[in-house]
Length: 502
Image (cartoon, rainbow, N blue to C red; front, side, top):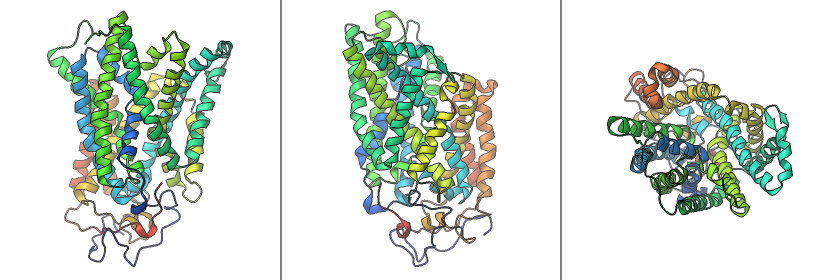
């Protein structure tokens, strides 16, 4: 098939029934984990979607970012405004992305085949998976640091293990890292159902812990707090920082915006996604912002110091009966964030690369091994590596999002031939040229170059936080300009090759 989308009439197909000529899936593109999820057996309701955000929004990294806004001179209402602007944009982005998963029932690596082709789609999946593997290792290391504190508090003699270093990590660090690494492997070995259960249980624990932590530090400040640092930003500088902060907040979730379909493919309905996103994104993010204001403002009131994250407050607690449960809650949080943001994506990526050899469990083990062998503590301690590798690769994700969303919503208008996403037939809708949609990459590559330049070249430092937006917008516009319009697209259900909900 030439490098254009099929124009066959959809007259004999609809999205609720299986046409008689559904092709048999290719084993090089299909296995039970990549298969569409049956619409009648999808267990994720609004609460399941909400708990994704209840965990992920309250990650330690997010607190470090938001408290940093306080340190840079934004006061309470400015931080709330920053989070609100970002939350509104994210609600729209993640709802649109989530709807794709709900309608098609497919994970992100398969979804990316729609725009990039049955083989070209792997490029998008690998880019997302590579970022996730690095962050999986780093987040596991950060959780291990908290576990180190717990272990030394319980058994002070273990502190001696921190004196011996192996490959840049102490022996105690290796024990903690290995324990948390194994815990996450065990959870994913039971599949997405166990991930959903863990996240659903962890969500209320995290929200309660953070709220209690804010009340505790406020009590230490005699229920008074500073609303800003001594010399807050004002005027144009203040608004520039607000919008830049909102842009960076969106970029933090740009990776999740790509592979949200990994979760929403299991959603019961679009209403479940909207309600879950509404509670989990704008409302939950406002709660997050309020906690940030209290933690930063109360601590600044106490000693004039600005904390980096809630872990600083927990580590300063003198009473072990408070410090230990609070530290364990932070570990529960970090594991939950890792599972939803950094573990599921590379699992599906690896399953997509070798569907005949890798299922969810095997791909999970390989992802975890990769996340460990990169020695993530060394990467974390090398800001240059983080900036250029993750910053550069992250800038590529914006153009990927732009092409995929423009293709699905503006070009195809939700019409997808799901069985052909798993077909290698030369006349298949997504075979394009040898399985690669050249026009999609013609839009992606120049937009990605622009995004990387803006993100990494010092001359563009003032707008570096908006590199994702520039890349996404340029890619979407280029794609719509170079792909023929007015085409008709087949709209075929994946029911004939689907699997039960997970």
